[in-house]
Image (cartoon, one colour):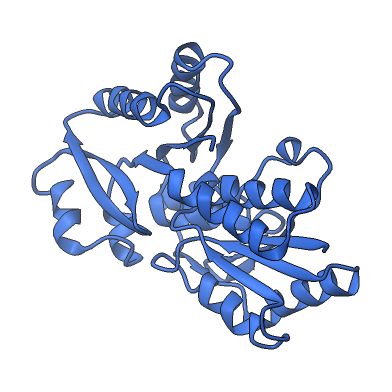
Length: 282
């Protein structure tokens, strides 16, 4: 059986990790003021960061339509795939998963399997890569789906933001939690827990937040092979500091990649975010 893998653009999978294997990507859409377009091609993370720092226009996002997913599935099947595993960002953060499910209903039952990564960025990206690897090894539709779900179960996603206001405005974190970073003047470490953004710890400074991200990442990595991604938006220096420390502490144990978050995720976390995704290998 030939299985194709589809994901969405919030996964920001570096092309070099694919090793020439195929992964179809359906883009989310970002609006900056009156201009709207797919992230990654028409709207970049730099565009979002500049708009948010200058506060000159509103920035918002929208999910891909079911028709866009249906087109991706149809293309994969027409190209010879017998089925598709479609892996997407958390259904609690976006309607993207729902769009994929609606599109899957247009095809024979069981042809399209949709997986909720319960995360985003490389929390999603590593799950999509696990599916791609299993598909390339000749796995069945169920085996490819299970490979993605197993990666999801092993994933820890942690991040720090300068302000919780962007997450609050977008409805990605509750108003009560957002008060932690304003009324109490602390810098929260956030975590993806069962697909939702929750406050894990509270620290007083950005420096301490980076130190805690490092310590928590090392703890999540365990002692065996592990893949790690460091993310940021307009905070390359912070991300490089974290990457350097993790490269020393986890030397030679797996992938260690650094990238900006996509424009859609960036629109909800804001400039200055630094995050880390940790996935011990199964």
